[in-house]
Length: 255
Image (cartoon, rainbow, N blue to C red):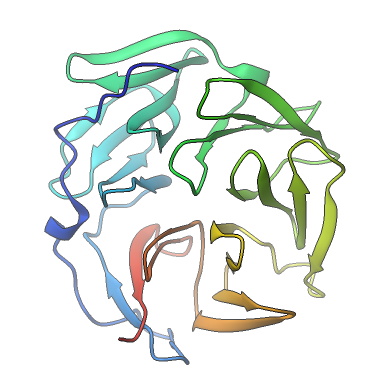
């Protein structure tokens, strides 16, 4: 595994100004408080285990707290094992340290996207061209293919050992590289599962374009209705990149 290096330029999420009113048309039926974060239009974001937030707009990764550029010519990024890992515009895997971007070689599986595992250590690789592939690197640095798939993965969460992923309206669970099992199908074909978070084996959140849900047993409980997108979770707080206005929102659980 590469040496751990947390970019000092990334400020804590707690320093990010927010507006404590929800967007128009948004409802939080179970008492969650909805907060809009700094209005930087984002294509991708991540939150590390200590609450640091970064966003990618186009090819530039920025600190959400002050908008300062951290790196440019980036296709995708994720926080994993204390690092900001990234895919460069030339298709190399790299990471950011105090002196800039360090590359370590070609991206496994020629992946186009990175996603961090919910354990804060593992890193998922998502290939968006045939052969569609979901791969992962665990905390030991071991890289392996998890699944060859009929279509690109929309979202993934969990760890390399136990994870869930979505393709369109379908949600699959998988242990390691065993055969994935279909566990949820949304009946409306335009309801795509675009966000997932699984902080532990008992807790699963998913999002469509229209809402954010918590899975409790066989039930999906709506936490927020009106928009949705990619998810990250830290403690009792969910961060959502709303695909409508490309802005980050926080859902804070009731006390």
